Every structure is written in structure tokens, then in C-alpha cells.
Length: 170
Image (cartoon, rainbow, N blue to C red):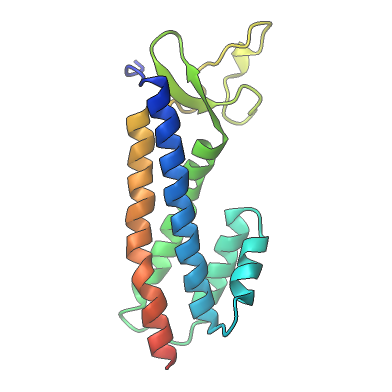
């Protein structure tokens, strides 16, 4: 059974907060990427930002981490796991970024897949009415806020690595 939804404005606010927290994480990851490359200019971050999807940026980060000569030192080992966590959370970020706020079956407001999203939207609701079913997800404002907290927590875990990496390079 679907939990009671949220107020419409609460879902919109939660979406904005979550996406802002994700962008903060992306910025920190771009700085970490620069540090792993021992970049002396902003060119590395610019190149990182040219990729439009996180899957490409994740591949850059993963490769840079794998080629970091000090990666097996105890203090740097957790970085691999943090980068992988970002890759896994990206799927939730995409749902938040590409979902639509809708009143679902008069139970309240949720973030749900847009009806045209063939991978996540329910196929049986494509009819003459513009009917939003719950699809593969229906997030309340509180659930979206939980993801925002995960994005922020990961950002705080990744942030210290930039300085540690730069210090280790010497």
C-alpha cells in the first residue's frame, strides 16, 4: 500500500534541495579528480564537466583513482568505495532530476516517473487521460529529503581527500 503523499510544495522544495546537494557532491568529486591527476590548471575540471552524464565522469574518476600511485595506502583505500557509492546514488539522482511532481490517485503528491519514461512509468496508463501512475517509484518529500541527506553525507566524506591527495603528491 502506498503511504500518504506529501504537500505539493514540499515535494518541489525537496527536489530542489536534493539536486543542489548532488551538485555539491559533483563539485567535490571534480576537485578530487583534479587532485588525483595532480592538475596545475582548471583544465581537468573543465574536461570533467564536459561530460554530460555522471557515468562518464564516474569512469574518469575511477580511472584516475586506479592510477593514483598511492591508492593502496590505508588512508586512500576508502576513496574507491566512496566513488562507487556516488555511482550507485546517481540512479536516485536521475530519478529525482527526471521525475515529475504529481497527485497520485488522490493520495497526495509524489515525485513519479513521467508518463513517457518507458523504463520506469507504468505502461497500462497510456490512455486518453494524462494519468500519472506510480510507476517504479513514488517518492514523498520526506523520501527525497533522505536522498538529499545521503548526497550531502557523501560529499562530506569525499571532501577531505582533495587536500590529502595534494599533500601526498607533495
